[in-house]
Image 1 (cartoon, helix red, strand yellow):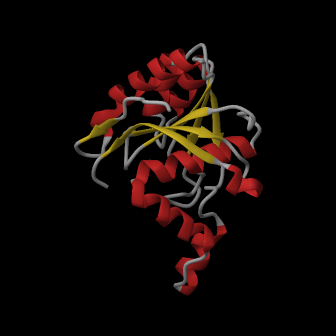
Image 2: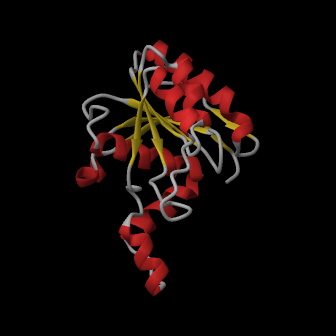
Image 3: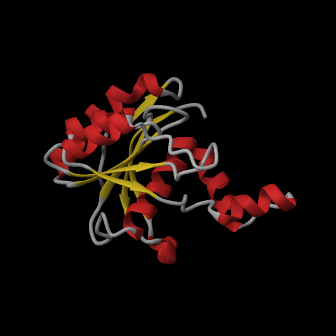
Length: 189
């Protein structure tokens, strides 16, 4: 039997970012986890994480170009530069749990399996869905190994409010992925 502390935030959102990153740092150091995957839209959270986790393998995952507006990358250039200067990697790729299926939904008004999986994960909070998704994306890109645990950090809207210990898997082996522990998450979604 293993007993661990889980932190539950009263509300989701970016006000939890510093607490989540500190909890992740303490957990990763105590358990010897080297791979940290962090969601970051504008790069603000990515900069913070890349500073805190300088000695770790940090992968900052941003929205794909055109997520909100055609041809626009939401990751700010200044933040991109700082993340790379801090030694972290940046991954910009199609979302693992939507991709082309989102276009099918928008065009034909139907939901497909990937979006169904995403909506099911959101029952545990937006950050949980994000953590699973960015872990798959980082594994697909070969930026984290799939044979050891990683910590994924995600959030609701902006900032970070969720951290999970995950045994990664690539998209083609999605059902081999394991959410092993919750470090922190909001109580409400």
